[in-house]
Image 1: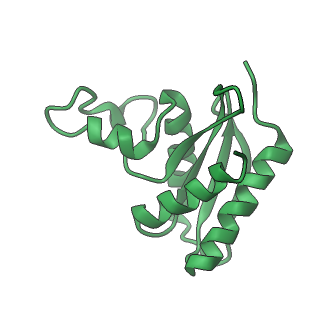
Image 2 (image 1 turned 180 degrees about the vertical axis):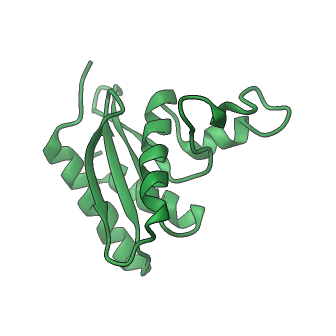
Length: 134
């Protein structure tokens, strides 16, 4: 199994922070490795304390299922094939802001989770972190 390096995780966090600043939002940004263990984390000055856990859970959720947390959210609505999945694994986050990170071979090497603003902003900032490694 390939794993994200610390340097790659730092690049993702830096890019996410730059996007946050450009959007004028304060974020918590978590990057986990292929085993869903925390690899890098940043809490921007003034970011909500309550979003620390959410950012980490978004990253873990994206890695556990190798898909964006917003996609999982769509599947977990009443009547959906993953209804109530957010109650598994010690609590998942099933709204946008978590994305898997892949290497050039298409293997998942980790994930990023972002929290601190609207879910649309969270997703945009997470996407900036992922895109920096493409």
